[in-house]
Amino acid sequence: MVEKINPTDGTVFRQLRRNHHLTLEQVADAHNSIAFISKFEQGRSNISFARLSHLLFRINISVEEFVFIRDLQAGAVPPAANSRFVYNTLIHRDFEAILALQDSLSVDHPTLADYDYLLKQEKAWQKRYENDHNRQTQFELISIQIFRLTLIDRVKPPDQPSPFKNVTDAMVKLQELARPLVSYLYSVETWNYFELYWFRHLMVALPVETIQNLLPLAMKRSEKYQAFNQIGNLRIQTLFSAFTVFVNTRHLTAAKKVLTTVEKFLHDTNDLSNSAILLFLRGWYQAVIGQTSAGFEMCQQAISLEHILDQPTQERRLRYLLKVVHINIKDPQGGAFFM
Image (cartoon, rainbow, N blue to C red; front, side):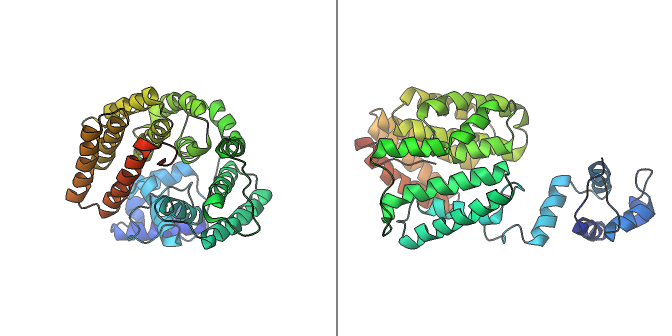
């Protein structure tokens, strides 16, 4: 089957070929003639994925790197200064901006302007979904709706009473919103980046029992793809998120099991970033089960490690989280924090 390739693909390919000081004659072979490559570079010929991947091999560029460079030139990738951005063609920059706001409001106090922004984005995504019933757009819309609803009681917008009677009622309604995701996740036999991403991202709106059931499925059904770096890292991040749910709700057996699993995953991997977070979470767990001095010492060690490694953003995040953990020890409801 011949796939229609974006006309800019040929232009990007030509730039890369020339950058590697390769002529058309040097790249051409029995699979792709000089004439065909020339037409492709000029945007005058479609190309199958198999032929494109073979061409990229001929100029020493991976398929993943080629797509990244193409999207970078198209503006789909933020400037290099935004070091926290993880490139994946599934996740678009406009939705990343909403996620960035969500992340910041776990530390900063939200304003009415933040709420209005989310309301505007929710309406925009509703139109997107009306025009294209795509599962990615559907889950993005659900995410925005949940995020906006959780802000209502924090900013109290005028003429917008809380839709929730109490905390229990709030969780029931948020879980109802997330139900399409749950049904989908149970039905998928092999989990890719997409399934892990949305399980982790919407975990805060799922019942604890559902998370306990889905988590082993997530690990088992994504295991064969863990060598793909983004999936491997997302498996760790998903476990971290599950731990915070379990420890906040005092499902301590489940929380301990998560820590043990992550320790096995990270053993001898040279993954210092995730290892520092694991150290902090181990300290949180120790503090919750009553070993407060040892637990807080672990948390401080993780913060010191981030300082030594010159990771100021993560250091600030863990310092803030440590304050939350102190509150969490006394009042799990008042000091809940979800990764």
